[in-house]
Length: 355
Ligand code: DOR
Ligand code: ZN
Image (cartoon, rainbow, N blue to C red; front, side, top):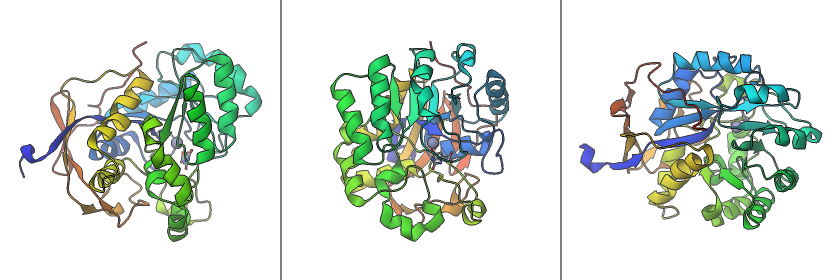
């Protein structure tokens, strides 16, 4: 196959990944995580702050950035976190991060914000940077009230149900600065798959029924982003009783979306919007020159053992994807080709917000 048989897309952006570094590098690190990003067509990833030691101080953030610098093979940016007790840190880090992530429901790491702090945090975080929320079910409505009171740009992560999407659609309609993301696992798996997957289907928000999933698909035009929520855990951890929530996703997002293109449920420009222009707009992230991916549109069977992520498992095991990345070029230099990452550790760029 020559390059001319392949489809060229701009490098994709995943605004929601958990690369686990520092603190849980047995699950993933900046090298393995950004290799997985390249293999999945993402030339840019933004890393979440729920590390083993949450990124809620400038010291912790600086340590994380230092660890990333030597390892990354894709462009990498960061979010800050808060449990409501670090507002004085906000001004120190705001030029280093793309936004603030708040966890309003229980998830991996037990990193849960007391909702009574929400408005105080909203008022302390700089207006020119988004707040991203993990908010499930009726908590989305509560967040929308705070957005209305503060006017603060807010991204609602991994919308999984009608109850979560409806308040976002309403808020958008009334002109509030709200965006919404969906994950491939909520688009392509349901609670029927949960039974089959057992502990490997455990994720927050949980997989939902086919009718909830259909509601997401019906409203995809009003959704801004597909985010992988790449959340690697070892298969041993998944099986040993503690079963942390989350599933790897960087390398299966584009292949699954291309399956939807094959099936006539999406078109390539939808992928460019949801994994490119949409996240870039939220992050205020300009395009990089000469940064693109070449994609082969052909069916293949997804297999966890072939993935670059340390996790080496996927909830999409055995499913027929619609295509995969054959080449990744970043700023004119080939970073991934013939199934191999050729970029050297540290060749990715540490991203800072433009303002
Ligand atoms: O399933 C999840 N896993 N949901 C989250 O919100 C966090 C993530 C993780 O960090 O493992
Ligand atoms: Zn997440």
